Image (cartoon, rainbow, N blue to C red; front, side, top):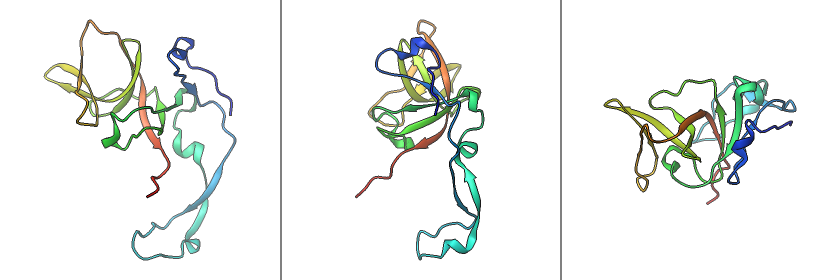
Length: 155
């Protein structure tokens, strides 16, 4: 996979953002039946095709990048420490969407909220207060989270 930084100045503070430009084609079996969370079923009987994960996960390849999450401020939105986010910067930053933002020289992932004419970046963890974005702050939306990739927790 070829990776180039989106913008060189985003390589500060130990963070690097990478575009998804080229992936090796990875096709995995796709079963048209749903899976039972109760009794097991023989899914092989329903094998339909192979799906290219790049086409499935990435709508705009030249405007999509991945970023690894550090921290737990979004854990109630199933974005946990170590998760990898797929982010599309062509999507509009709308109320209720989870966005990657560059706020006062720091990266953050939060839910965009608009209330009473004000803009907030809201965590998905009660331990973190919402951040009201004011005109005195420097903020840029770097994209909207489209997928969350993480390993299941082993119990």
